[in-house]
Length: 270
Image (cartoon, rainbow, N blue to C red):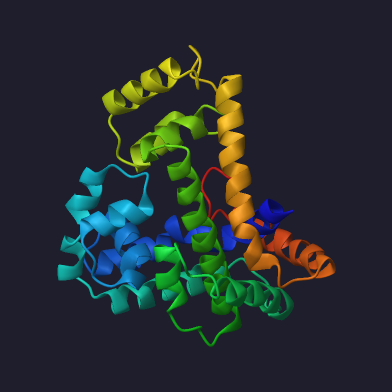
């Protein structure tokens, strides 16, 4: 149920990493797409160095981060890029979402406010949790899902660390499920083919992937364990909602997520 709650509303946040409305705003201050992504997501932390972004974002090649951060802060302040991201979210989401968002926003905000009581061990989430709530209902919904996403994400990194899985290894294991193309993840995270292949070979020797680069039984058990632990650590954010309210959350959120996908705001998810 926890994963269903998260996934039902996640497109409302996830679209910001692909929206041309965001790209154009970041370009207006001199940032390309990777630079805009790193700066806009890290901005809540302040003008941090590359190492902090490498640590909190986890699965990107450190070299692409060092090529964009801290240089981005010479072009734009964290406060400005946070504002630009909200402007982009407002423009993009308003095209595809209905006007009546009051009930789902109230439910999502309650869960997000609950998550703010558990800052410990979640640095990227904590930074976003310190940002003020927008006044507009649509942007409150976007901010609520942003908090829920980063809350879950920091927990996911803890699970990966506990199992000794690096950033690139997590990507390879994701691809090894057969659900996602390797080139898409490898290129967006800026890993070379050589680095990717070496990681595949290492995971093969560890018995986690087979000759076809798909998960072995051991690999499936490992990945399932990581996902289950991630759900477990994300669950407290939603415990403020009754079982009936959780069902209502999914009932209201699922059509919104579908509208974002069908509106073309998440490439490859139609």
